[in-house]
Picture 1 (cartoon, rainbow, N blue to C red):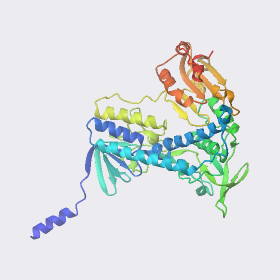
Picture 2 (cartoon, one colour):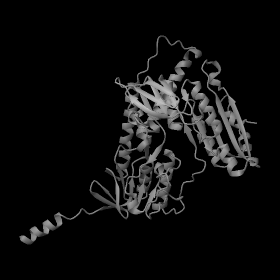
Picture 3 (cartoon, helix red, strand yellow):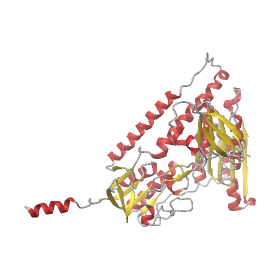
Length: 465
């Protein structure tokens, strides 16, 4: 009897045995989920570790709810044009923020459930909590250890805040989706796509918006035509664009409103201050424990196959700091699964000619090299550009006007289209098809030989001279 008690006592104090998988994915965002599901299809035993709602930034506080709000803002624009198209809109049209917020949030929660159902269907285990590397190909979550032959880091990123007195009185892009009502007066800080998208949404829905940028233009990493045109358009729709502006401090009044102090004056009675000055990777996972190297910005360093510096550990998506787009993470995740679990050793994502859309007002579509990048790569004498700027036919009868601008960047002598950039109504939807052409190596002659669809804005891309 004594021996039995000693036996039970000995084994009762043993550390729990680590559970083993073929593939362990840290991060339940779009890239991680896509990679795990594809690996499971190939027969791999998989698990996904996630501390929050499934779907990551895109589904919960990114492109999905943002697109819902952008669609809402587009309705506001069209309401302005109704009378010009003969519709008698009697009385005052009211907008109720709570209505669309409730519907948007319900839609997102349903997506969370769908993601969970897909994991369950694929027999992929979901592990809730924060993962920390505690040894070679071993992580710990809430005291439980998990090992795998292959571990993927797909932890995404988060908004960054400045070191400014009173910074805590502002919100990030995440906080935008927690707003219970449309702020009457807003200040948005930043010149990137998140800043211009949210500023445009707020303004179009009726908020008094100031957009503060450090230099003279927004979207400076985009083609100069896009940067210039959108900077002008933001001012055209009534946004108070404050250039060469930085905030020195923020104070909160007794009534809850904010006073924002800048080098170009004070902005008072602000209801919402939104910081959109960049994002940083989520790397608080004990990566140094297993020798995963980071670059100077804290992004996980990977090679063209998504390998990190530590064998058996991979990374993709926003945590790598390159091409921060949901479809990129999904594509990279699936390519990685094919390489690891379907005997496709050369499977990798081609990061060239990735199309992207900015849901500004009007929207932007771009793929390939900017004119500046093309000149730097090939030389100015090897590059020829074609362009068009016009008022789309939709505005033929409206008082409200927006412009459409388009540019083709071509490499001589065959005039291969190495860049395509456009801003205007419908550019978000027309880009995908033209991206296929650019990806296939189409030339200006190929574009010219395609019969135009009339009357459309897209026909300009095949009729430029």
